[in-house]
Image (cartoon, protein in one colour):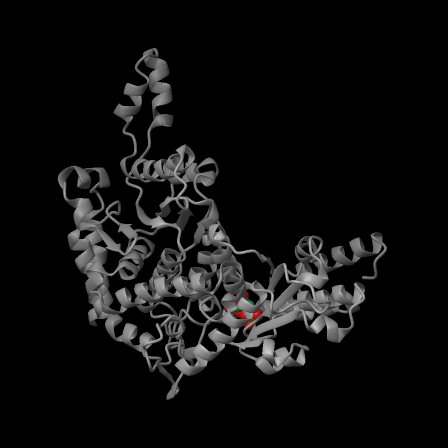
Length: 547
Ligand code: F6P
C-alpha cells in the first residue's frame, strides 16, 4: 500500500474510533480549544474549533496532504508549471497579484510579468479615463454607466467584488449582463442612455454564445438609437485571450485588453477581467484587492499545513466529504454586500472540483467535489437553516462575517454579527432532550413529552467562522484567495485538475445543435427531448411566432 492509501486508511479508522465524541464535550474538556484552533492573518480570523476533530485528526489530515505531495504541488502552482494538464497550461492567477518589486515568473520559459503589468496598466488607465471624463461618449458626453457583458468566470468574480465593495464606489454606475435571456440585458438597457454608456465584452475565449448574443444585441440597440456601427464601436471595449476575435467583432485594438490562457476564467478577476471593479471603485481599491490576495498567497506558499488557512479549510472539507459522508457544504456571508459570494464559490468550487477522473484520466477512487450552496445571512436563517439544525443531513457551514459594516456600527450591524455567532454555537451545541423538557417545565407532563422531541436539536453540526475586521478591498482579496487555494488543495488530495471544465462543453455543443433545430425544424433526439422541442414549437405557433 502506498503512503497516500495508508494515510487514507488511518483516517478511516480514526473516524470510526472518534465518531462518538461530541463537539460540545470536546469544548467542555478542552478549555484552550479556540486558542489552538484558530488562525489570524491581517484583519482575518479563521476559527475552525467548531469542527468534529482533535489535534490527532489534524495531524492525520496533514499526513494525508504530505502523502499527496502537497508541498511539491504548491511549488508547481507558484512557479508556473503546467498544473492544468488536460489543457497543457499553467495556472498563474497568483502572478497577476504580485507586487511590482517581483521581477520574474515564467510560463513556458517566458517571463509573464511584463505582459501582465502592461495589460493591467492599460485597463487601469482606461478605467481612469472613464472616471475623470477624459474618455467621453461619441457625442461628447461624459460616461455615466459601464455595462460588463460576460458569464461564468468572466462575470461572477467582478460582479461579486463590485457588489461587495459598494461603499467604496465612485461615480460611474456599473452593471452586468450575463444571461442570454433577453430579460437580463433588457432590464439593464432600459435604464441607460447609449450616449453615456460604455460596454465591455468580457470573454476569455470570445466564443461564448451568451456573451456574443448579448454583445450583438447591444450593437442592435445602438443601431436602433440611430448610431452608425463606427459610432457604436466607440462605446465598446473588450477583455479576452483572443484579442484578434475581439478586434474582428469591431472593437478598437486600443480598447481590447488581453488576458492569457494560463488564467482560468474563474480565477480571472485579478486580470483585466476585473475592469468593472476598476471602474466601480477605482484603481487604488483594485490594487488593494490584489494586495490582500497576494498576502494570502504568501501565507499559503510559506506556512506549514497545520497553520495554513487555505490548507486547513481544504483538509476539513475533505474530512467531511470523504470520511463523514457529508451531503454538501454551505457558505453564509453575514453581509448584504457579500451576497454574491455563494454564487462565486459555487462556480469556483463545483466547476473546479466536479470531476470523476483523476489528472491521469483514470476514474476517481473517492467522492470528489462537494455540493456547495449558500445564501445571505441572516435571510437564509429563515429559509434553509431549519435543515442544518434539525435535518438528517450533515452539511458543514462556513460563516463569513465582517465585524463592521464599513464603519457603521448600529444595532442592526450588531444584530447580524450576533446571529452569525449564535447560529454557529447552536449548530455545535444543539439542545438535549432534558434541556428541551426543562424549557417546557410549565406544561402538563403529557404535553411536555409530546413536544420535547420537536424542540430537541442534535447539535454536533460543524462550522468554520471566517471573520474579517471590515469588508475592505484588502480583506476581500484575502478571503477570495483563501477559497481559491482551498479549492486547489482539495484538487491535490483528490488528484484532480481544478483548472479545466470539460463537462460544461458537452451541454454547450448540444445547445448549439438544438438551437438550430428549434429554428429550422428537423431533429432526431430521444423521445423526451423531441417532446420538449415539440412543445416549444407548439407554444411559438400559438404565440404567432415562427417555430
Ligand atoms: O461555464 C463554462 C465556462 O467555460 C467557464 O469556465 C467560463 O468562465 C465561462 O464559460 C465563460 O467563458 P468565456 O470567458 O470564454 O466567455
